Image (cartoon, rainbow, N blue to C red):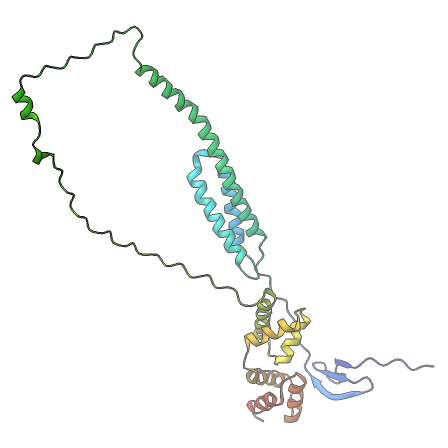
Length: 295
């Protein structure tokens, strides 16, 4: 008879206690123990309230755009939907579907408003043209009316009166225009500063955000946090970028991890040091943490 196969090496529940895990090297139990890792609690997804507001305002704008006599109110609501839709699309780590639909509806309401306004203008223009034709017809004289001859010019009285009416040479000379002051130069408005460009790629910015989320829950070493981000699917380069951008105090992280272990079980100085090395802290960081907790 063949002996049953032994389980592979790894961490298993300690047969002596119910609260710890013990390392099985594939042949026998080792002396290394640790508290069970806390299960990862997924974060709640973000909501995009601005995008939902853009969708609601866009629906109202599209409904009012078909009413020609509410065109001013339509343009104001459409402008609000455009602004909310653009802001909703620029928010990071938020769903963008509602903001996209709100932006599309605001653009659609612009076209509907232009078409309805043009239709109303086309109906009112022929009425104005007919009124102009009626007014021009009333201004024309009636046919058959007698034309009055032009009045004859009165004859000149005498030569002296004609000469007295002629202007003198001094009166004929035009006066020189007064000099005008030169216009003051208009100030030139400076060009607005360019908008700051986002730093890093989208994957790198998400790696930074994910690293902060993990550090808010528990303590990590640098290599341990990089490995956790790689487990989440981030490339190694982006994971290193996210960890180095957050750049916490790794000595403080090691001390916090040591306190986490001591809250659950007792350790010797060397055992706690080895456990921190197993968590991929550097020897210097492990020495700092062991000294920080009182060894």
